[in-house]
Image: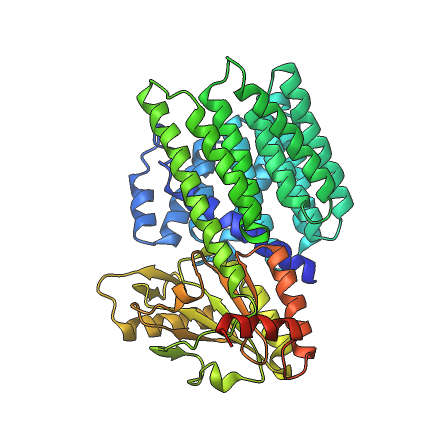
Length: 495
């Protein structure tokens, strides 16, 4: 059961960004013969039943229209919160329609991929893993029948199937599937049907899925594509696309090193920065903008790595006391009053998808450990959001008062069935800076003496696993921190 929860967090973290970018693209039916202005008006006003009636009637009159089916998918994705059951039913019907189609277009195959990712995520949240896996495999079979025309879509669905296999405790099957997938890309590179960017994408996916269970193979595959790219960049035929692929590969590696080995990450980032600077300046204005963007991206990575180094130095020191502005869903408290308990400071915000991805873990940990002396404090501040009751979500407002923000947070907490309370610190507070919060979610774990024992940034499964193990260990410890931590704390204070 726990593995399914962890999988769900990974997929939500990935899926939320995909949902937002997809929904913000131009209407896929813009060039169709249908007048969709009425549908768009219904969607804009949140009249979901009217929008559903319009698109269902249009599909009945024009069965099989890929444009209308795409529009129906847009409606399903927009209503996942407001009408979750109707949204799930619509996605299920769309997937069945596409999988039953004798001739699928590439556009419809992409829609099938999106719908499959969305719907299987919902099924996993409901712990219906076997059903999600069967559905994803059906979609994969459908797209695979299209041959090389839809090979990019097929590989994306293969990645989803692999995640589902991991989530349903079939890691070896997932590994074999992704080995075949990445080897197919390697073969395509050799034949000239795929390029190095395809191999980088496949390698990055493989790394993300199996870095914990097959680290040696991940390193070997990373090294292989790294050597290919370096050789390409050193050749006279190197172009900006090759540099882009190299930046993509290194960026994923840096994301991992940011939290696991920041000093090594700084070395890699510095090498990448040199590689970008040594690349001939493009003469095309568009390519010049992209090249300059690479440099800015590396500088941003270096800043994150330096922040991570600061977080490392915080481990073993006493956590500073916070100055609260307000509390939501809990009694007033302080770190001093929580001495003797293991405390998790969870830095988050209502607009943060990865933060929301951690909620299943936070609920589980509260239920499992609260009566053993474990406390979670959700650390946030005014973000200018109100609660949209009709759509059951937080939305950005204008001139939102502090009291309105508190009301929104109370509704938000209830909606997500959170057990822990929130601490709001003033906007001008330096508390986030004191704890080197440069990205959220950030979890700061304190022992019974209020000493920082672990800091994790992000919502991945490895972070969740490491935090839970540390929580259990700290709860079993006595009232004093370990000797090594005491020495570090004294050294930090200069005593």
